[in-house]
Length: 139
Image 1 (cartoon, rainbow, N blue to C red):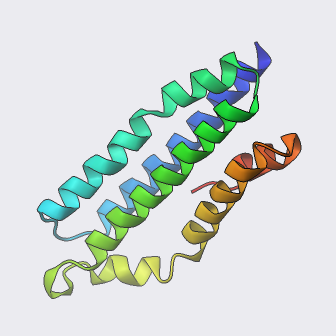
Image 2 (cartoon, one colour; image 1 turned 45 degrees about the horizontal axis):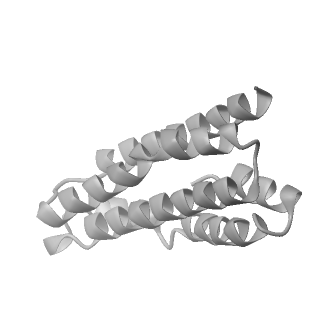
Image 3 (cartoon, helix red, strand yellow; image 1 turned 90 degrees about the horizontal axis):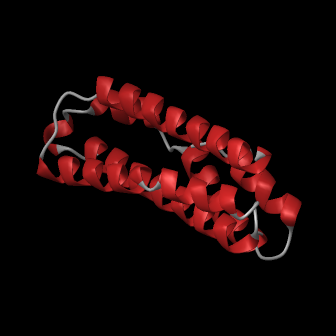
């Protein structure tokens, strides 16, 4: 029961971080277009799969394949967030210059995605390695 609870806590933390970052990103946004709306829907799709992946991890007691699936979901959510951010920043006429200034090079986002990718590979070789990669690399 403890692995299931910890999986839900970890997922709640990740979703909370995404929600906060998304909220602040949109607060710094002055304009959106259709591409931004589709990118936002893409992010929502991947975030909507968190309960499924969390249940898989909890039910299978942190075994390799469910952890790799969870890592792939984290990676896809990170990529989707990055796509949304890019679509917002490259809006016509620099309408979202404030956001571009705040984001900068987004090193933390890129490092998080790298950790997710490493965690997916570690899921098949090192029990403690993938737990570290997925726990300490928040978006």
